[in-house]
Length: 128
Length: 148
Image 1 (cartoon, one colour):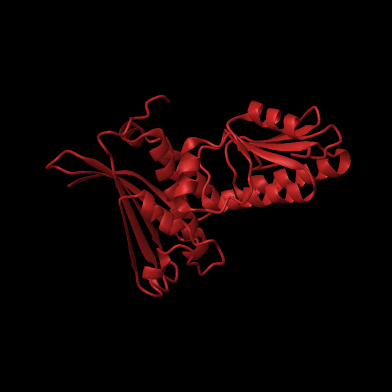
Image 2 (spheres, one colour):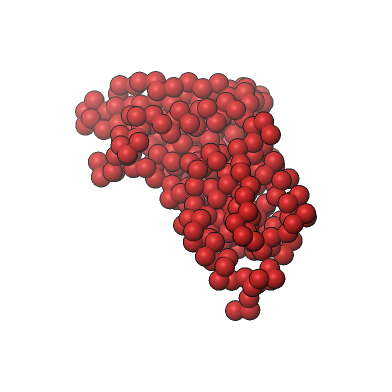
């Protein structure tokens, strides 16, 4: 898809959406469409948004990403945002942008580990 | 004060914004004077300013990035100036308060920039566009980012 810089891969039962260099509106729209189609076709136990390739994410882009994460959660699929860079976190914290109940992890490995620990094999969250 | 232009970026579409942010972030003067975290924050402030040009400035404007050096003490600062030819600000004072927005957004961009940068100045006349100028001084204790 022209202008869309993302890759959608499946790691066992988890879908990994890798945003390669930007979280711009066009990329998020295309990623959302591909993700929803895949969730409808084959489902998933969890979704990881891997964004370590994004060096800058402004408020609009973060808000759009958060909405996409929320949409996935509303479909009953747990999600984690992996690889937020320290500069982006510092920026978002300085602006006071609402993060909701977004789950974040340092990297993809930790995100997959988190989902593995918190999901049972039917896709439902384990009781805490 | 000595002023050196590091870049001037016309902002007419989303793609221009990405080019500007990429250039600012990879500027060697900036990377050699600020920590990696500060560079990202400064580049994101530029992104917010550019986005405001697209949203509120009629998508006609530019970002001017300059390096300023104080002759007396030798300190340097990055200055980001956003100039647009849109309708201007309705209320300049309100624009830097958290949650104020005329465009249905969160209204956090300019107040956030004011907190991140050392100074933020808005010049605007209704109907005559706007100029937003933000400056951040390099601190002597900032760890230069020369890793890339």
